[in-house]
Image 1 (cartoon, rainbow, N blue to C red):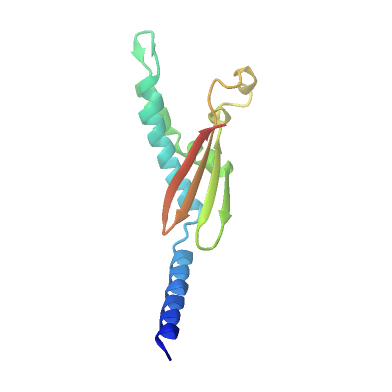
Image 2: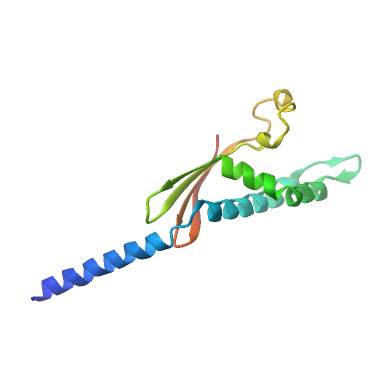
Length: 139
């Protein structure tokens, strides 16, 4: 066997090993749901709650933060029901459409003018048991 064949064999083995490692560490939907719920919670608590107005002399930030903590299962359900996963064996691609107005009771939704609460599309890649958000845009 010459050096070229040895190099090709080593490279081939490394590629197969890398593909196996990627496939074994491709995160599943429940892991994504947990990750996305944590990310959404942090975003709301850091960027939405602090910007709420004062109402009758009381800051709504504390109530907002408590509502987020108290409704983790609803946030997770919102994410789970609005996420499409594409499984490519070695990695997964997740697209989540977040429409916060979907958390409101159905009877209140017709009274909410469209566009008052922005909706977002979040695109994420999962590999090596981790997630990377690469795009988050208003819809």
